[in-house]
Length: 311
Image (cartoon, rainbow, N blue to C red; front, side):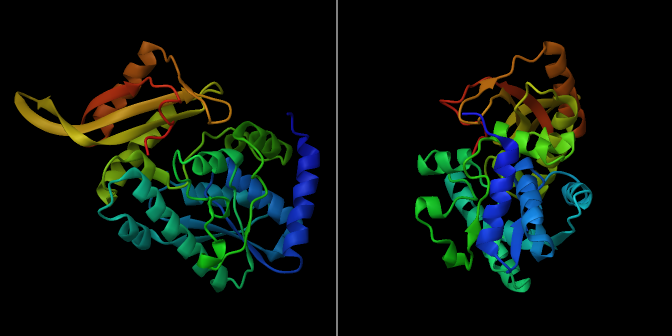
């Protein structure tokens, strides 16, 4: 069913205004289109009673905080940035199970936002949860970090009252709303990025060293693989190591899996049939520029049975 984006914007602005009233709300902004749209809707509804907050958790893409700050400034929204890297890495230390990793991220994420709510004397948290997040979590496919009440977890446990203006939309409709809000194309056409960030693209334990490798690999992949037909394109750092050759010596090196898919709603996806020359170009850059990488593989698995992200 097609969404009337202008009607949707009017209704959601009024919904936020009705819920929050004269109180203050905090909007968690990650840089993705979902949270950016939520921030813009909240700004229209609340004006100065909105606090937009970016959690610099050490798991985001390169220069993310700066880019989000500049994008929101053009929407007359001032972004607050909290350096919370230490707490997030501590929360993830030693965890290798994918579902446990997501739950650990979710818990430290909401604990931190609960602290922020108190710090800014806000009463509500506005976040960019969309329909696909809720569906996957309720079906038990994977725990999305931004889903609580829909699976019986009371947000009050974290000191939160949550507003989710995009909860009925899928990604393609969120992009249409973003365009109608006059967000720049680089925002509304940006590829999805998971809430737990680069932690979802590391198989095994999340460490600062491994995050730096996958952050660099992510920048390379996003630079070289573009186009509207690509829904997501990203590398994954695997947990095992492979035998390689350096000069005439045997070495053990990192393995990166490259994942590029086409999709509309993130519930189903197929691997993109990239030109061989494109794959070779990406492979060469990853081998050359990411320390320790000696093997690059291309994932051609559809969703289902696989998910798009690895964890």
